[in-house]
Length: 294
Image 1 (spheres, helix red, strand yellow):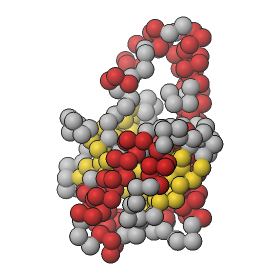
Image 2: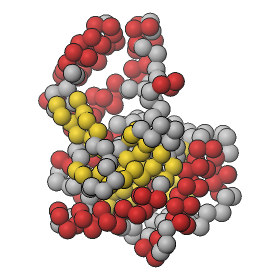
Image 3: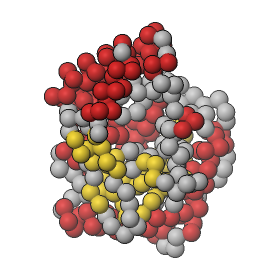
C-alpha cells in the first residue's frame, strides 16, 4: 500500500481488512498477513493513526520522498516486502481507498487452486470493486476488444464464475510469487498510474493467467468520473493543456507513450500524433476519438 493524506479512507481500509479476517472462521490458519505501507509525505497524521491503531497483523510503515505518487509508493512497499525475511506466497496490491469485502478471502484460495489445476501455474487474481452507494462496478479486470483503438470491455463478476481477462486495475489485486519471480514488479518508469495495466497485460502476454475473482472483493468509488472529473480540455488555454498533459495525477502523456511503447509498440507513432492533436485541437480530437472508439 501507499498513502498520501487520505487518513479517514486509509483507516477505513485497514479496518475492513481486519474485520473481514476476524469474521471468516479459520482464516488465520490459512493466511499470515503482513502490511507494507509507504507514507509518501502525509501531513494529515495518516501514518501515526495507522501506527497506533493496534491491528492484529504487523504493519511496516516505510518513509517516502513526498513525490513517489502511486507507482513509486507501491514499488517502495513491494521492494520492502520482497526483501523481508518472510518469503511470501503472494502480494496483494491494495489501494487505501478500497474497503475489503469478505468475498476476497473466501475466494482467494479457491481461485489459486483453480489456476494451478487448469494452467499448471499460479497467476494474477483481480478483485473487482463496486460503488458502495450504487452497487455499480468501478474497477477490476478488462479485455481489449480492439487492439488498434484499445477499446476495452470490463469483465464483470457474476458471483460464481472465475473468468479470464487480459489486464486489470491494481485496486485489490493479488500477484503470486511465481509471477513476481518471472516478471519482477511494477515498471519504475511510470510516474503515477498506468503501471498496473502494463504489469497485468504483459504478464498475460507472457503466458500467466490473469483471472477475475468470482464475486466483488471490495468497495471503491470511481474517482475518475462525476464530481472529480477533469475540466474538458477545450475549455483550457493552450498553455493549460500543455501543463495538464504533464501533470502526474492526470492522463500524463509520458505514461501513455510508455504504456504503448511497452505493450503495443506499433501504436506508438499514432498515439504520439493523437496526443499532439489533443493538445492543439482538443475538440476535433474528441470528435475523432468518439467516432473511432464506437
